[in-house]
Image (tube, rainbow, N blue to C red; front, side, top):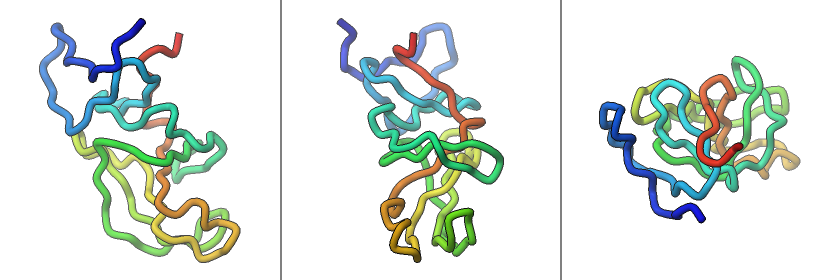
Length: 127
């Protein structure tokens, strides 16, 4: 049975230090550019979202991600206040965080995160 301890850095790769390492026993999503852990599969809410540059996933929570200033944007589902999110390690813009939804039907998105599929890769136990 796999350990639920955080994964140590691979011995054959240059050592990178991330803020958070997700446990090896969880299927995870990582930054495609630097492999920093981003989210556990258990935090995935929906695979049916559209980002600025293609398909995206909606997550309840993320790690190793920084947040820019909030701004109002007119998205496919209406007006929202969103803040771009970026990988803390390589600084790549990954998607955004929903700060506020102005339509009642969209309130469930508040505090949630969009990560575009082109910026993440599946890690740990997807076989």
